[in-house]
Every structure is written in C-alpha cells, then in structure tokens.
Amino acid sequence: MKIAQIAPLAESVPPRLYGGTERIVSYLTEELVRQGHDVTLFASGDSVTRAELVPVTEMALRLNPAVRDPIPYHMILLDAVRRRADEFDALHFHIDLIHMPLVQDFIDRCVTTLHGRLDLPDLPAFYRTFGKHSLVSISDHQRLPMPPVNWAGTIHHGLPADLLSPRTGPSEGYLAFLGRISPEKRPDRAIRIAARAGLALRIAAKIDAVDRLYWEKEIAPLVERYPNIHYIGEISEAQKAEFLGRASALLFPIDWPEPFGLVMIEAMACATPVVAFRCGSVPEVIDHGQSGFIVENEDEAVEAVRLLHELDRRRVRAAFDARFTAERMAADYVGLYHALPGARTQPAMLCRLRGEGAELQVVG
Image (cartoon, rainbow, N blue to C red; front, side, top):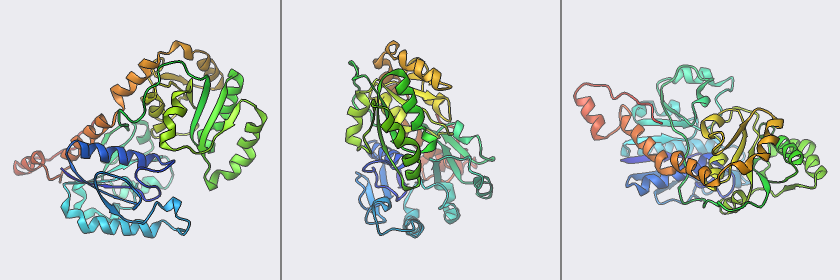
C-alpha cells in the first residue's frame, strides 16, 4: 500500500529524548517500510526515516526557542497533506483532532490513532460532531469516556524486537522511574515505595515548564530527604536499555487514566518486571505475576518489590515478544487500512464493485 503517516511536530520522529507518540510513529513507519509498503512521513525536518520524509518544519517545535505558537505550523502540515492526499491509499493521522474538519472530502481513506487521554470535558462535543472519522484507541480503557464514535479498533503499541536487549542476569538492585515529572505520574509514590523497601531509586525524567513548581515544592525536597533517591534527568533512547535492564523493577505508580504507558513495554523488552498501580491501561499491558505486579496502593507496592525474586525475567521478555512487537503492531494497522471504506486496495475495490460495505473490523 501507499501510506501517509502524519506525525505531531512537537518532537522529531523519532524524538531525541522524551516523546511517546513520535516514537510510536517512528516504529510503525519503519516497520511498514520493512514490510514493503510505500510510506510517506509528514514530520519535522530533523526526523530520521527510511520512508519518504516531508519536512514540514526545520526542527522539532519543542527544541526551537523561536516557536511560541504551534498552531500555524500544524496548519502548514495539514496543507502539505491535503496537497498530496490523492497519492495515498490510506492516510494515518497521529495529531489528535485538529485535522478532522479539513479531511472530510477524503475521510473514507483516513484513520486517526488517539494517543492521549480522552476524559477531558471539551472532547465529547467535538467527537459527536465528527463522528464518522475512523478512530483507533491504544487501549480499551482509553475509550471509556467517549461518546459513540466510529471505532476502527484497539491497537496496542509495539517496539522493534531488537530495539532493547533483554538482561536476564542479576540486577543491580535499584528501582527505576522513567518518563516525566508530573502529579499524575506520581514520582512521590515511587520515592516512598523505594524508601520503605530499602532500595535505591533512580529517576530518569524530564521536567516540563508547567511542572517546574511541582518539582520544586513537592519532589525535589523528597529527593534531598532520602539518600537512596537519585535524580538523573532526561535520558536518550540509547541509554534506556542499560537504565531499565540493570534495574530490579520499573515503578509505574500512576494516578491517572493512562492511555497506554509505553515505558511499561520498554521495561518488559529489557526483561525488567513492572510494579504498576491499577489505573488506565495497566491491566491490559501487565500480566500479573508474569511480567510484573499490579497493585492497589503503596503498601501492596512495597510488598510487590519484596516479591520480585519470584519473577523469571525470561518470562517478562517472553510476554513482550508475544504481544508488544512493532511487527505485530504494523500487521494490525495494515489490516485496518485494508478495511477502511475508501482504501484503495483490491479487497476494498471488490467490495465496492459488489455493492457491499467495507465494514471496519476491530483488530487486536
């Protein structure tokens, strides 16, 4: 197929540091190319891909100090997509909702993966208005706040199988927290769990401007209070394998409806178990007692840390290989592209010639 992938412009594809959506767009794009599809990636100019790159901006918006408002650049992105829309059998958007009013004349070839939380009060009215657009959720739990919409399927994220090497030998005895410092990620819980368990905690996380005060007032004092807590800062993709692989476990003590939680499968790829709170997608990702432990509170988390020796790290990696590879993710999306009502594929054309509707199918 000839496929367009339309990425956000905040980060490059893949991102240099933090950026879950852009990372998934990269994994999907590269795997589609590997499988023989003709892929065009609309993204920032500092992106790196084997697909055809349409560089909408010179660099990622988050890294450009001259950028104050991202909206004009996303309008440029949408104009570039519209100019070339007729070239593609399917167009896959990863930019939430800003494009939907502008793709109505070729909507039957479009699909949008919703990467963020959907429990925000302003979203239902929008999705009721644009209810015909084919949407993909990244977990079943993510769908719960939404009004009736045209769900094309739930497709869990995946990583290249060889991206992060598993480390099945003894760990270095520390706990890991990876991602972003913010109230909903609950680094304070992670610190208290590590302190009570008597283990070191290494925090590799970025601090956005909006969360700077939270860091300064709530988290930095905790880091200073406990000698076993170490804040490392933001780390690169190349550093993840060692950071996660040497840890006894990843702590994922979230307090919000996490749509997916990419860091969980990154840890699993490294054969590192996950201790996660039962929120959002967690029960869909973690196999309790195999790839980690799902807990309800800090007391259970401390107990789970003490039971980590019961988990076989080879089984943690096996759980990743069975469910969360980029190859599986891309295959799911290709099946979805073929099922789009207007997809320019042989099965879709035959259905139209027979007068049949090319109905969307839920894929795993």
